[in-house]
Amino acid sequence: MTEVLLNVMDGWPQGLQTLIVILIKITLILIPVMLGVAYLTFAERKLIGYMQVRIGPNRVGPKGWLQPIADALKLMFKEIILPTGANRFLFLTAPVLAIGPALAAWAVIPFTEGMVLADINAGLLYILALTSVGVYGVIIAGWASNSRYAFLGAMRSAAQIVAYEIAMGFALVGVLMAAGSLNLREIVLAQQGSILHWFLLPLWPLFLVYFISGVAETNRAPFDVAEGESEIVAGFHVEYSGMAFAVFFLAEYANMILIAVLTAIMFLGGWLSPFHGILPASAFTLPVVGALLGDGIHWFLIKVSLFLFIYLWLRATFPRYRYDQIMRLGWKVFIPVTIVWLVVLGVAIKVNLGPWFD
Amino acid sequence: MLSLRGPFMTQQVVFYIFAAIMVFAGTMVISVRNPVHAALFLVLAFFSSAAVWLLLEAEFLAIALVLVYVGAVMVLFLFVVMMLDINMAPLREGFIRYLPVGIVIAVLVAVQLVLVVGSSYFGLESFPAPEPRPAEYSNTEALGNVLYTTYVYPFEIAAVILLVAIVAAIVLTMRRRPHVKRQRPDRQVAVRRSDRVRLVGMAPEKKPSVRR
Image 1: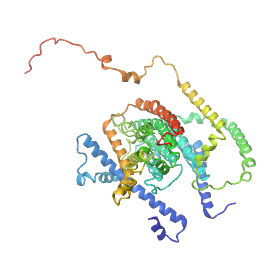
Image 2: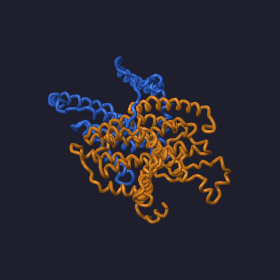
Image 3: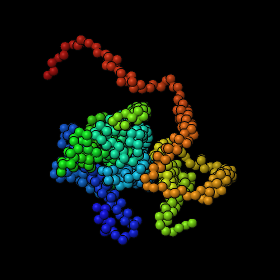
């Protein structure tokens, strides 16, 4: 596809060609992500509905399938209310600061071996830096709203995200040690072989810590004290309405998908097929079945959907954590677990423990 | 040596844009009245200096700056600054009185900086521009190699100093407060029904009457 484009633009300045190709690639990543966000909200309402023996949204469109579109339209046409005494500039900047990092992080995600926008060799660091910047949207929103509840939400969120980021960072150090690279594509390639070679098994505690910290970082239930609708109404976005609120909503769901994608890449082997080493090599050369059984973006999407399902499942199942228990879990349980496992991992790598590190 | 063509030109334009933003943000940090705004301008300054470092092909340091300072340190800063209700008027009362002393100190610091990191030691002539690295060159890996071989002792000493600082900070917050009740999660988890609830058998005091 890139070749066709380059042929069309033949003779244009080199810089312009590169720019247009990159912009088209960005569009090709962002449109599915935004559609995914829209239908993740629908999936959430449906799934939680079924888990609570309800039906969920079923009025707009066939079986309710147009519900997210209707929601988006409604939010777009609602008035954005500026609270009196709010800091106008920061109040309107906060949603942008929330969604900016959530979308920018997608630049380094490898969907398959060749499908990646920016194949940089510090990809893991880039992801970690950007996910930590996302908290500014929440803090600034809480402060600029000039509201007690919003401010409480912002304070809770700031402390919580700083706490869980450390555990998350240590879990990523484990992935880095096991893969020997910060490049996300090479991290996936380091898990080649069979389903046993995925980092899920050797990094099992780090996997748990990473995913749970990811749930906490995205302020999702059972760690959603920043919203806490039963205590502080809706937390940091209590004063937001219309599209400004919708942007926060988009950022939260885009972050959820991002965490699911990262977990799939780092622990479940991204686009790698689970059938390597189980089926004979001839099975992968069959005409259609072989393509389905072999590596490909479909395996990536299946793994991501699995983690998104767990996100929704957690929300439907668990009551909200008490705030001091969240802090205790982050500082006193997760960080020691990750440090201990880093030492174990170091020994395992040093003695070339098979089948992962030989 | 200002060449006006090719990628060099683009780099210079990008550099001047980010450098201008950085100087502007730095000035705003010390001149705006609202401390929260000052902290946010500091975040902007960190971002633009990270961009300048990226131009210098120091991508590890640039990303680490965003990760550590923007992602963690400034969040805690904002946390504290937002909770303080600072009245700026008394802080500005002595401004004129202290101005001469302030200027003297500022000039001294500037002179020292010029003497130490001035052009005689760090000028463009004393350092030839390094070769641009190929795309697959990993800055992080090179830095790690140097840190854990050539500079391993200074690196470890710096780590120990940081550890001492952490321990000291935690010790400072440790106060013995005997009257404060604390939660013990282990005991909360270990509690059994028999510890808390006593079931008492009691004969009904009178026969329940038939309601009509």
